[in-house]
Length: 322
Image (cartoon, rainbow, N blue to C red; front, side, top):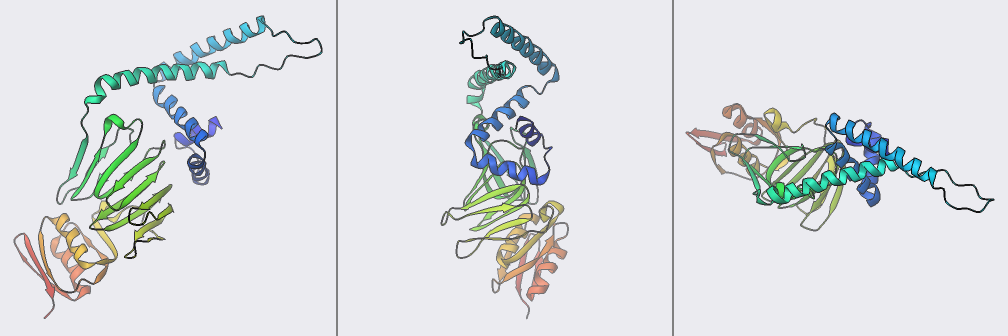
């Protein structure tokens, strides 16, 4: 099992084995604790020189304990043979060493980390911003989105708060939680996109597995790769296919499936830094628009909806065709 855990933490498991491992971690607290311990060992002993030294010390400790045990055999009845020594003194030493490093890290954190302010990240109008989180996971924010998290609490709880849209690439480890106004998403290690604006809540899973929860009625959905969850008007999480490899907005294109056109135009405002004055029926739109040319973007949305537009500086009027 130790080999399997190490392969999981270092990304060496094939997809079926990795998915099964994540399921077991969620359902088995003892396994989750062991995974956390192994992750700690990998993190603390990432320096090969440090690991080599500790391994050598562990071997010396192990040999000493084995010899000591052999020199002082237990007093057993004559007809009972002593059982083979099964205790891994070497592993005990490594865990003790890890605990020492953790204790030192905790002391450093208590001294310095308490004063770390909460980190707030904002992607302005028309921009994308990527941030590397304390564990090496990354979050890429779409335009007009905000993310906050607490570095000082990260070691005990991987948790962020999102307003807007972001794409996450999460390092394997303990549960990673994304809180949004409309719900939450929990993962162990995966790639996924979260959108939460104006009571619109969508989550797309690209690798691994995620758990989505709605605050409206506490409904939950488990998503696997190539699936997405959409919060419906009835406050139900509908699970649908997701055939894209990455969120379109990361490639300069916003995609929509039956989204009210007013929400589509609001996204256009965020991408181009404009103000849209819309007069017309707020019908659902399915399609996309590009981020590199405003005229092209308006044409892609307005033409199939029977709408016209007029650009006046930073203001765009969108109205029904006469």
